[in-house]
Length: 192
Length: 200
Image 1 (cartoon, rainbow over the protein chains, first blue to last red):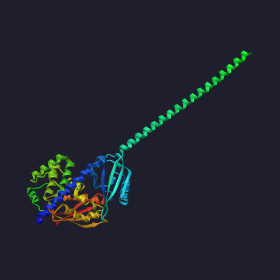
Image 2 (image 1 turned 90 degrees about the horizontal axis):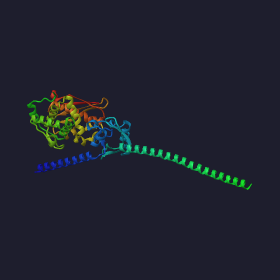
Image 3 (image 1 turned 180 degrees about the vertical axis):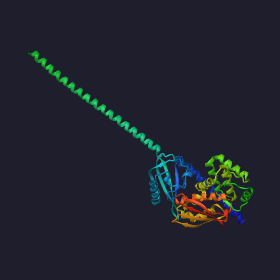
Image 4 (image 1 turned 60 degrees about the vertical axis):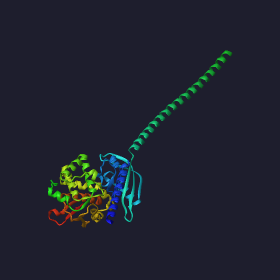
């Protein structure tokens, strides 16, 4: 009876663990943000499907390898060290190199994972792909430059127009002056 | 062919004492999918059926449950045959397993260094297998090598090839460098135990 009860409890616990496991896996797979987990030396121990989508690296190509597989060595070491020493890294811009050699600008967030009485045993990293934002920024910059050029052109035209009007006014003034002089001259001639 | 097996050996495996956690079939499944997709899984399941050891990877493999230990070896043999793997291919299969293993994730907190993994190797073994005992025996930091022995398990030589790849991959996660593994003593070659030497 005691054995049966023990077996039943073990079965329930195993079923609970399986459910929890599939929940964690689904959650990890669902997030569109590339994530990975490394040990404190920067060796990748886990990653999610979004990571594969962005970098092109599959699990079997990256798990067990150094973070420098996809991040510049010094940059990777710095991020991991900072996360281990200072607990987290917030919004730092770095570049990821994809499997086909393309450079992807990303914002990295990192957080150390601590276990009670054991200290830091790993680092969670998430990467926010900045490609679209950078593209938009570039487009906006180009637009701004185009607009600035247009404004400058308009100002030039404006300056020219104003200059012409001033000249016309000056000429009109001159004509008026001459007309007055002529009238005066004619009057004097008649009187004589 | 490293995965040749007689009917007698199949029977011996099917009746072998001991159990293995289902996580090993999950990692086999993932390896097969990565290699040849669902078609590959079908081929491996057909091989298993021919060995009177039917198994549905998708339906039956559960990470936490226990299965007869002989199925562990039959799954390796069937995979090797169906996918045409040589010894190196089987070692690769072993190497890829820790990358997808849920059980290995439970031990991630020990993946800080080679020493730590070495220290916990026995515990990791026990989480997977109810038979056999893995014991670290020597660690030479200066010369960068370790030795571990596996006692009381004598299933099939292909299992040793698989394990050498598996151990190399786990150790690499701790030392951060490629690890070479050699089985320096083997039960199947007159030894009293299996001894694996790791160098990096």
